[in-house]
Image (cartoon, rainbow, N blue to C red):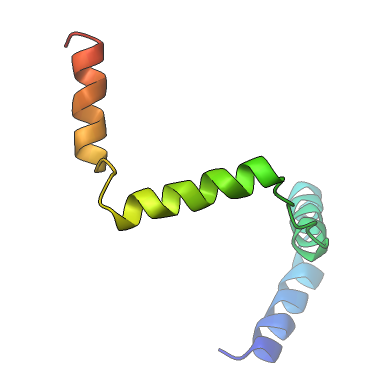
Length: 78
């Protein structure tokens, strides 16, 4: 379905609805979706940490999810 078709169908459904809660929630969702998101800026320490982590990954110095879970279980003496 093309964007214009979706818009038309949404408008039709909105016009047919008398459910105030649903309409308010849809309105809230659309406002959140349309707000401009501010890009998070990293400081130099964070940029350095990301670069270090990338290097560790390139060298294979990381744990898989399973390995990490196993270490946690060992720490918790399970």
